[in-house]
Structures are given as structure tokens and as C-alpha cells.
Length: 328
Image 1 (cartoon, helix red, strand yellow):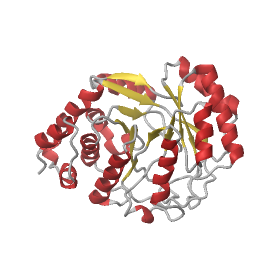
Image 2 (cartoon, rainbow, N blue to C red; image 1 turned 45 degrees about the vertical axis):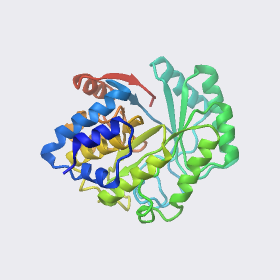
Image 3 (cartoon, rainbow, N blue to C red; image 1 turned 90 degrees about the vertical axis):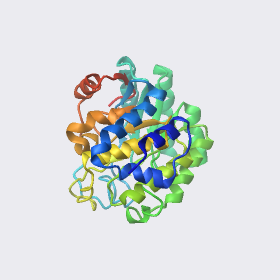
Image 4 (cartoon, one colour; image 1 turned 30 degrees about the vertical axis):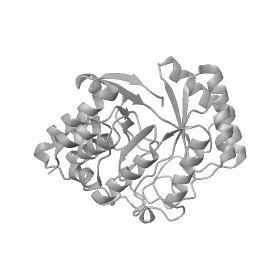
């Protein structure tokens, strides 16, 4: 059984947990989860108080991807019924940013499908980023695949603040979820973006068959990367994808243990309960706020999510304060 007090105190001091300690959190008996949550909350409160960042996401480019990621509705091996379209026009992206600003958002987030982009698309995106900055001054994040150093520099120069590029799983397990690019390519892409001066948002997906060892390995790798923000997705099975039957091990209590472990390993990181929060945590999703300081509402690219109003109600009822961090 995890020595919860010892792990909490190490995290409060900023000391690294061992692999064995991280695994012990995932193996924590269900009857001790409330004690575990209280310890995670102590660490979370030290760095973020009672504030919850609420993030909404605009899907700026959907589907039409060349990669074979088995979990993804937008991959070339997916038969899921989704909308497919290229990069949205600048006017539409700018309008979304203006609306975000009016709603009090501190960050505007745009997601683009595909793994690589030609310079024409990057030029168009950079133009939109520059226009958004000029019109609103808001912080901008793009969730993207691989970009070159020149493309990263161009987006940074245009005003892009942050890049989201997830590891998605552990190094050892990654070939079982994707064969068209490698784990090292993902890590290298993060290095390229960071070298350009961009903030890094990087996390992963729980429930792809990786097991507890795989979960720990992924978070240990993220610890090395030290991203500014870590989104944690719980797999949502979608009919038509190769992984549509995955994720049965994701009970609400197990998901809460994952979030607590992530907080102990990354005490000061912006930790987000992202896709699948509602689907996997069910009636216990409010307890996630004891470990994380950020959530998504209103949808996750091609799947639905808790409405903004319900999300804000949950935050208030759990005794936290909401801060908007994006827009749909």
C-alpha cells in the first residue's frame, strides 16, 4: 500500500517520486482513495489554491489525417462518422478569438488534425495568429502535429504562445498504437517547439491497453520533458476506430488514482482532466478537482462533453472558483 503521507511530503518539497512510489499510488486500495485525494489536494492547493481553469477548444482543421493512430477518430484507419475539413478561414478563427475575449477567456485554443503541414497552411495559420493578437491580445495555443524549426519560428513570430503535442502513451507501448511515426519523433517535435520559444502543453491518453506500468512510464517521460501544461485524457471508445473496445479497466476510482499520481509527480504543473472525464469518472468527476487545476468543457474535437453551465456548476458545488481559459 502507498505511504500516502510520505509521497505527499516528497511532492510538497518538489522531490521526485520513484517508479515504485508512483505505481503504489495506482495500486492504492479503493477504501483509501479519499485519503489519497486529500493528499493530492494539499499539493494542488499549494500551487493553485482553489482556482480551476476551464478550457474550451475550437477544432480548426478536422480529419483527413495520414497517420494510423488506432485510438483516433481522425486517422486514416478510422471509419468513425466525423466531419472533415481543411483549415478554417482566418475570419472564422479571428471571430472565435474575439468571442473568447468578450467571454473573459485568457487563452484561445485551436486544434489542427494531421501530422505534417505544408508552408502554405503554416503561412495561413500564422496570418490568423497575427490577426488574433492584433485584435484581442489574447494568449494563443495550437494543438498540432510535427512542424519544422522554420515553421515553429514563423508561428512564434506571428504571436503563437503555446503548442500542444501529446506523447499519448509510453515509449515501449507506442508502436502498438501507431506505426506511421515514432515516439522519438514526438519528443523531437516538442524540442523543436521549445527551441523556438513556445510554451509546451503535452500529456497523454489513459486506457489504450498500456497497463499500470505503461501509465507510470508515460508520466515519468513527461516529468523529463517538464511541460507547462499536462492534459490527461481518458479514452472514449468510438465506433469505427480500431480501439473501439478499449478502456474497460477505467473505473472512476482508477481514473482518480491516475490524476493523483500525476499531481504528485508534477506538483506545480498545470494539470488538466481533459477528454473522457465525464465518460469515465461519471458521478465522481467532481473529485478530480482535488488533483487537477484545469478541465475541458463542451467537447473534445470530435466527441461531446459536459456543457459549460454544468461544468461551472460542478466547480462551484465542489467549493472551487472557475477561470475561463479558452473557447469553443
